[in-house]
Length: 274
Image (cartoon, rainbow, N blue to C red; front, side, top):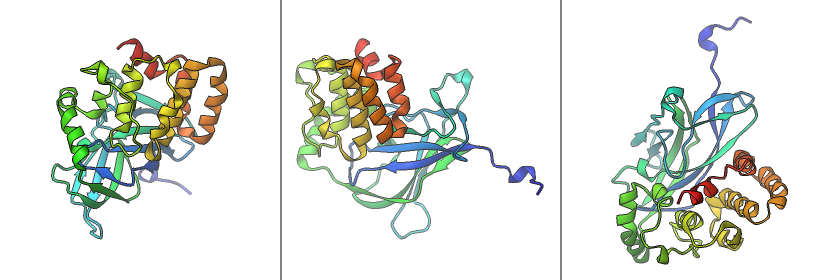
């Protein structure tokens, strides 16, 4: 059968996995885990935009509905431009590979979003090659009095940094007050822990892996990745075996494990430049 040119769809990215928190706290970071694959699955994609917890770089968008309604009430579309001349961060997705990324998307939410439930679709890519997730339920609540006080205390630092993602990489204003999070319910547990791992007083090989126990749920893959970082610092000889376990449990973290093995750990780099 002859196929006409309009019937041929070029390969592109696909969102093959989305991990969200059971509930988000308004005013706090909104971390989402996305796993990127390709359509068709065997395709190799040369340049995909690379968002991170610190910067979306226009690669992620969101569409929101009120439950039961057919038309969305809000949309923020991706605006990423992938161009070698612009030196925009990007990555290659090889045939059959998937890539897990943790992104912080609170900046995409409408300013007047209220506590309650909405339906959402996550968008990823560089136009015109934009992938959409399935429609899922997102829940938001108001912060408690203690959470609001914590947020107010950090607000000057976060506003100076520009976002919680950027804040976690900035040196603490008061190093003596820097401490790892201990509460698995703390909506700031991930940025607090990352800030501690980068700027804390302990060397990586001395950090107790038990500190990672606060990272469950949406952060479970990152907890395994960070455990591998600590393993590489503490016992390089045992790292290879541990990295294989991480790859088996979370194939989307393979590139992270390969980077550590190649001496290109982002955490080690950040610590060396603090």
